[in-house]
Length: 358
Ligand code: ADP
Ligand code: MG
Image (cartoon, rainbow, N blue to C red; front, top):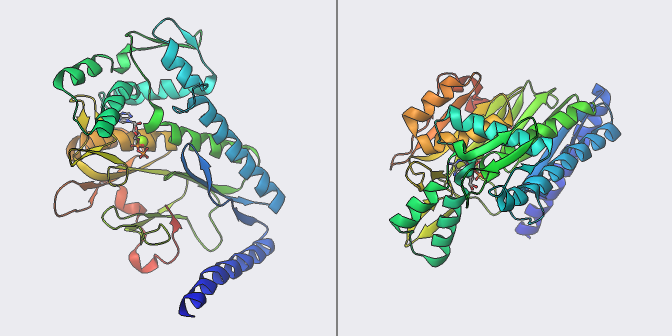
């Protein structure tokens, strides 16, 4: 009976609240519509739109998912027919023509490689493959295999021809992996699509890569984003009490860490983020959250900072205008470290009543 009552509350209260919210929206001239979660790029994607009418909001939601699906079809690692798979198959033999979007992501990727002195590097593919195999076989790669893979890694070996919009690999066996930037890029494009179709404000969340813009939900001055605590297991509904709540206006946020996605090789946790300088999994931080002006930057920097660790990571963030970081270094006593301007985004815990979940 108690359980039944709980289910009724869990279902009925949000429905009532949503109804009330919708009514109040009508009176304030805008509506707020939440798409709910859909699966994109192997993860969950959600869009919130503030628009003049229900119909306009629905149109914006569909535009946002449409572009995310298009990007997935171009850049998926898992689809043999994606443009990225074609590049990985053929670019060692000669220049491969690609779409504007794929070319733009690759250009941005090289930019972030240069900026992070190689900590972020989409040519990491051969090392990702090696560690994936190691996880399956439960045997770590040999030094020779690591050295061999590292010879095929390096953004200087990724040759982008802007005039002809082609991609070429300088070394056979290279493989581009957009896992550390593609979701952020898709979020930026989704926001662009929403703005174009007239959204007054909105939020896009693709697997924790979040960007918000414009008018926030009613009764809030900013968009509220809850950051999960990496040390607390999710509850039965898959959520956790947020560790922190951020208030954002026109910013993006992304988190990298090995607390959910990793393989174990002979009992040793091996992060899915790889330090290309050593060929080993990144291990300096439990997690790092980046706030930046766009989602591509937040995504790429979160991966780079995860490799670089505390000092070098903070130094990188300081070099990027508008970027801030919240880091949890590895070690027994997890402690939060904030970049210079990061605290300005924190919502005091007394006001942390209704986070928009991350
Ligand atoms: P998540 O995908 O869990 O949100 P990240 O944004 O940090 O986390 O991306 C991690 C992914 O990026 C890995 O799964 C891999 O595909 C790719 N990757 C791993 N190491 C690097 C690296 N050094 N530079 C760029 N991409 C990387
Ligand atoms: Mg990333």
